[in-house]
Length: 73
Image (cartoon, rainbow, N blue to C red):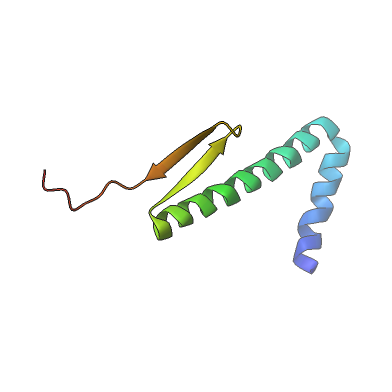
């Protein structure tokens, strides 16, 4: 817990002195973490299952799958 405080206190001071930049940096970091988690889950699913499907707006579905490797050509 003390390591978190060592990082959080200077970060909070920096955000307080630079509110626009600090808010943008915090939002960008949160967005990158969310995208990274989703990308990791998709990569793991692709590795374990061999593919995945994404629904786009409820009207279309995009399917990503591995090509079969037992093709003689």
